[in-house]
Amino acid sequence: MVSPYYSIEHWSTANAMPDYKNNDPVEITVNDRAATRQAIINAVRRSRTEFVERSSWAAHKAKTASMQDDWDYRGIAVHHAGRSFTCGPAALQLQDIQSMQMDPTLLQRMQGKMHADDIGYHYAIDCFGNIYEGRDIRFKGEHLFRYNTGIIGIVLLENLAEPEERKDLAGRMQSLVRLLGKNGPQIPGRQKDSLRKLVEILSNVFYIWVLGGHREFQNQSAGEGRICPGNVGLEFVKTLRASLRLSSPS
Image 1 (cartoon, rainbow, N blue to C red):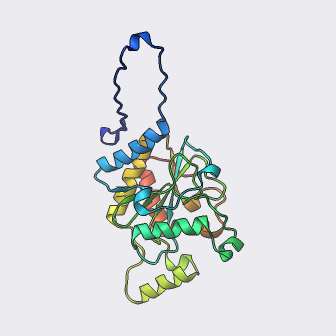
Image 2: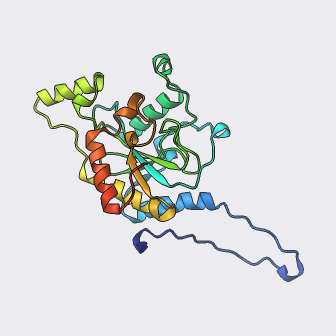
Image 3: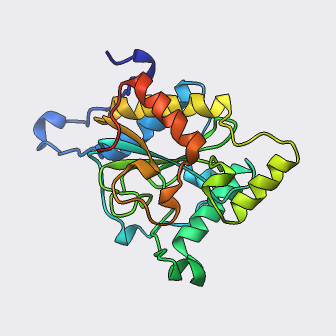
């Protein structure tokens, strides 16, 4: 049963034209996908969760001419911001992520990173539970390796990998933090709540039956895919998946 708390409503108004009975009918088209995008935003806000649209975090203009439409979503992939050291200002994190994905460095290109048409994720959630719009939901994401069709990408804006999972600078920084007596990576309660709400809302709009962490999807063993969303992130994804009765990626 769909909860009315997250129901998606479409409202419209119309006025009759003067002398309409003597005129030919006029066809009126409605962009249902644009309306649905807005309905998702409205549903998040009705759930008393902050939603930040692209324009509010100063996103770069997407290369929409080369982007592919996507709509029949069946799954959700959860990621983490694996190169983050802290839960910093979300807008700056998103700007950095978008810049890196749209214009990778020479070293990143040598490692197989390709130019993206926009930020790869559809949504991002910061440590305070605020939800940010990434790539417009009407376009196919670029967050999984050759497996993006029909999959919505959500990134948690923090590093949820344990130090032993990675051997790069981020892992060394985490090890140093541990030595200083700080706790390992954790998902704040408000971030957990917002991820649950967003998955529930998206499941009421699309036929979502799969929820997985990045590395659970097929052919994701290269690069960041072998770690993302970290052991901590993946453990919560499994818990959320079980409670929402969704399936793991096949």
